Structure formats: C-alpha cells, structure tokens
Image 1 (cartoon, rainbow, N blue to C red):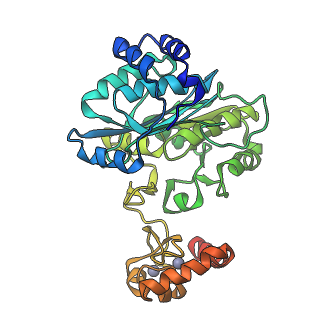
Image 2 (cartoon, helix red, strand yellow; image 1 turned 180 degrees about the vertical axis):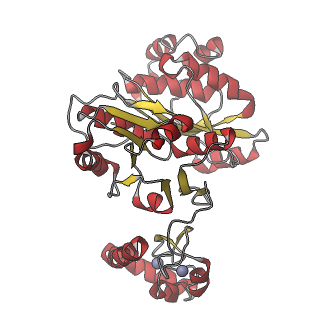
Image 3 (cartoon, rainbow, N blue to C red; image 1 turned 135 degrees about the vertical axis):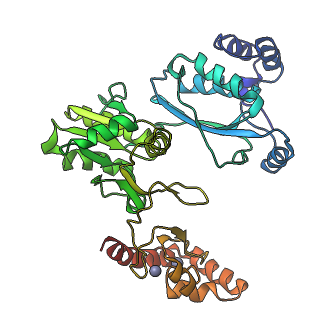
Length: 384
Ligand SMILES: [Zn+2]
Ligand SMILES: [Zn+2]
C-alpha cells in the first residue's frame, strides 16, 4: 500500500513530530520512529488485526469520554492524537470535529495511566471523566480509527452564531433529585422513543422524533412558554443533552441544566450514594442486554399482547430484524418474531429464507413496506 504523498515527505513528518505536545510519551522513540515510518492509519488487514487482538494476553479496559471544546484544526489534532494513542496500543473509534471529541476506546491495562496522563496533558481534557465500561471483555475494538467529522453529534443547526461554548449547568444525581423536588422543574428526555418507552425520569417530557436534529427545534417549540423555568435535559451518556442545553440557551431559555454523564452516570451515583432513583424502569443501551435495569418498575407493554413487559428484542426473521418489545409468552408463541408473517419465514428451511431475502434485497421497498405496516400498529399498542 502506498503512503499518501504528504507522508512520504520526510521533512513534513519531522515537523509533525516536533509539533507534538510536551505531554506526549516516549518522545525520543516516537520522533525516531516517525522519521522512518509516520503511518497515521492502519495498514494491516482487519482479519489479521482481529487475530492479533485475540492473541493478546494482557486484559484491556474499555473506556469512553467526550468533550465539547473548540479545535481549530481537527485534522492536525487528529494526527497528533493518532500518533500518541497508537504508541500506547490503544484501539477504538474516535470522532474529532471543530466542536470537540467523542471517543470510545480500549487500552491495555498497564497503559491506562499513560493514556490518562496523555489525555490530561491536553488542556481541554485535563481532569476529564473517563467512563469505564463494567461488563466488558475489552474485545470490542481491534484497530484504532480516528475520523474527522463535521460535528461530533449531528445537530442540523445551520445558525452560524450557535456555539457550544455557552452550555447549561451540569447537575449530578444529588442536585438533580433536589431540583426535581420543585414541581415546576421541567425534565426533558432527549433520547429516542424506544429508549423513553422502557425507562425515563418521573414526569419527563418526551420529544417525539426519532432524530436528534428534529428534536432540537421541537424542544424549543414545546417549551416556548417556559423560558424562565428550570429545565433539565438528559440523555444516555450526556453528549446529546449537553448540546441540547446549549441550543436552549441559544434560544433564550434562562435556567438550563443537563445531567452530567447522562443516565449511566446518574444510575451509578444513585447506587453509590444510596439515593432514591427518580429514573424509573430500564436504561436502554446498545449492548447484548439491550438495557440495564435501574428500578423494578416495568413501565412499557408487550407490543404484541399489551402485557407489562420491557425487554427489547430484534425480530428473529433475518429479513426483518425489527427492534420491538416482546413478553416471554409472546416470544414462545411467535418464536421470537414480530408477526405471524415473520414467524412463517423464520420456520422455513434456511436456503428458502436466504432465497427470499435475495428477492427482498433487490426491492428494498418490500422490506420497508413491511416495516412501516408494522410500526404504526406497534406504536399504537405500545402507547395504550
Ligand atoms: Zn406479549
Ligand atoms: Zn419481523
């Protein structure tokens, strides 16, 4: 594989290594290496990288963090970050934009402190909370990918005067509970419907759209008469509600707060400090469990029979895969499928199923139509 032209220029590479921050690790080794091979992306096949990961004997820690702060040149920031993280064998998926950074990564345990020191050496990231994934085998990433994006959270905001530099006040679990004692406090859920459906803060307002970019103007419109009230925005991990809080301030709201670290952090603080959880039900997350139970309340209903249920599942028919809520009885009755139609397909011989999917792939319409046909009916039942 050929290197991009800029990287073949030895001098340029040299300049690059000199421009690294003082906090960077292994300085001599790093710059030596860069002069000979400044590879800022991976050149080994995915398969081989994955094999290497599984051969590793040292456990990895999976962490995530984000920070909104102005980055003048995301491309340069990205390259420096890549070099530093690559040196300490970090894998992961990171997005960098003018507005900040959003990272999910894994690091060999013995390099955790080095990673922390490096991140803290970047002024805007000094002291940042690194969320450590608990139930994780550290095998989620086998390569380091850092991408420059327009935004770290797509927001659809076209107003050039909008800035992430003025955002709502952070609240932790204790302060959140305190604010909630005042009945005039408004709590706004900035997640999707299927997340809200299985768990949310008591009396939280749902902003009924499936995309964050639509939710932003919608939240402003919904609350336009409440500009002086205390408004708390929240989401799963904090990154969306933090932007939402800035957008509310931008639109003239005065007392805007956002839940620091989102529901994930709230649940942890509630447990540690033995506070009462004002979040009821389940926190939906995209892992194998599709959600973490926060309280015993079951606030949702099975989309098929209407019984109390809050377990999301994907329809077992591979040609459908619809995400929906199903109770145990319906799971048995429909073989884990969302409808009798899907169940029929699911119980066909595998070759026949594959042949059917082939037909569907050619005409995505059929596939989509069947989903649309399902969705309204499911929503109707789900909301009863
Ligand atoms: Zn059911
Ligand atoms: Zn289905």
